Image (tube, rainbow, N blue to C red; front, side):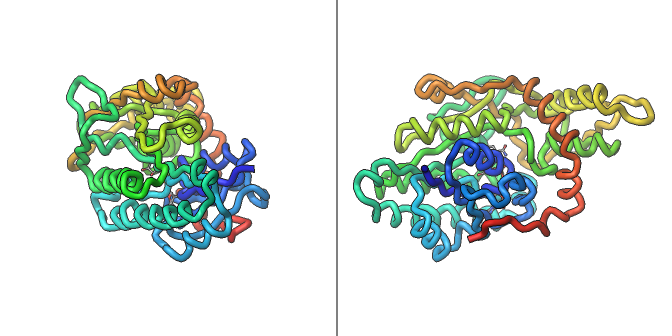
Length: 351
Ligand code: NAD
């Protein structure tokens, strides 16, 4: 049975990834600091599961990471742990540098030492996969798409810190030979996303019948990918990606923010109409734009599709419908985030 060390596995994408990996028969050691974004409720289905070991801790803690690697001897390390919210990075960039840069550096150093201690076959098979974002490439005009050759031009403290971590991962391959892989993915959406990000925020507020804030003119364009498709891409890169390479991951689903919000409103009009009979769209309110707000992101995932045969399984419309339904069906999960009680939960099998 393979063992993977997953960091940030109580967050949105990491949580989806861990649930799926354990279901597939992988033994997962899940290292997560449980910041506000880490939610034990997401992992409720794994409570007491023998193949899920939860370790409460920081990727920047050298002694802890060294011990976890030595005790559990993973065949792969997958780094999802990060501070991930652009608005929070504008208010307080230091935490982003601490986790995304200093924390990732520590994880790389400890992993390099562990990897060097392995015997030759295990060293050859080992992988360090770093999960990153398309935001490192900066902003696009009306045309063009990011490829793996696009120069880095991060514009927010969040994307700058992720760019720095990507460079460190690359450097650890070139300097020490660590077998690394990096994925740069577009905006994700789906189950278990913290309701501060656009899609779950809009769903939660629309269900509460309160205003739906949209930045600027709402015309900022993002490429959207269903989280399950992102997790499938990560698994595919881990099993077959070329060491040292970066792979862009995207859904070929460019949408203006305002159109995403309107699509959610239309789904909720059908499934959960407002009590006073108004359309949910009437709740949309334009608010002052985010400083440095990138205008357009678009991903060319041709390398991943061509080399590794990955393609998204769901369209944006299918994924959005699933997501809206998931939030309707899982209101207790959302409520416990909104009232803060999710932070009091304990995850079993801590090590
Ligand atoms: P998230 O904010 O939902 O989860 C982050 C997780 O990391 C949380 O569980 C948190 O507790 C944990 N964490 C934070 N600091 C830590 C530390 N110092 N040590 C250990 N754990 C720590 O983030 P997400 O949306 O799931 O994103 C996961 C990764 O994917 C991030 O690296 C992010 O940059 C990247 N990414 C996200 C998106 C997206 O649309 N959400 C798109 C592309 C790439």
